[in-house]
Length: 426
Image (cartoon, rainbow, N blue to C red):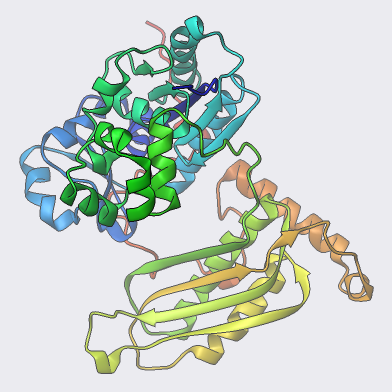
């Protein structure tokens, strides 16, 4: 059997959200810690100590509250501004080690290590891990293999090893290691496919690897076949170093409490619109279509349920926050109805295109776009330097009583001087 000459590393940040919180709060290192989702609903990140207590990923907080109280588990609400900034620092550090890199998620990236000699792969992986920890403070696990699926499997094993690095390129025990990985932990195998495989006696990654390819093609789909081939060492999923720009942008949140007033809904839509506009400006994009949506809780009395949305097709493409908020509020007023208790609101920007993909026109001159562009740049620069919402629009409100519930919010802000570590002379 001929194996690929590719060498791919998957670098994954360990319990990323927890690690970010620990970075600015050393007192919780080696203690059980969990981070909760929006409105403090479910567990979305756990420390090793929290996992040992039996706290499961995605479990509603009310179900684990007893375990939390009895074991003094530290609880944190999400702080996506912090996590996003730390992710950017990690990814920037990783670029030092490979010219070809695919950012897979906020805490994962694939690196092309083909130029590294086989005998140096393990040491190279250790150097990557050591550098990330030193430069950012974030612990990582690294799996190195000949395909992306195998590097995912290697990373799964690396998380359980003290060294934090596993090299399957030079390993003679690949089959033994794959036999230790349950089929539901194989990258690309979802819940329904897991049930199907188990019914047919495929319980581990090794079982899937050795199954006949004809059976895989007949009983699953092309993705199932790709996964099996990758486990055998044949690359079917290529590295994608050039990240495509988003085609749409959605920002939405459930409210911390039910909202009835149009004024509060307007504040929420304005805040979401400003957030989305900042995102597309960062990607140097403009938007042509806006969708505003609101809804009540689907779990309350059905007679009281209401959900609606409104599309606005802009005459001219833009990424101007002021113009976008103006159009979004027009859409909101059309779909808003009194006497309903709203649970969620959001905005979607679609038909996004590069800022240079269209020519200026007569209306651009009339609207004095150059001055608006300078204003948007000034707002983005100020908010990046002094923290999000340092400069905002009055429609976004100040009190924000509707905001998602975050009772355990750490309030850490990497753009704020007071969060810099203090060094005391002895």
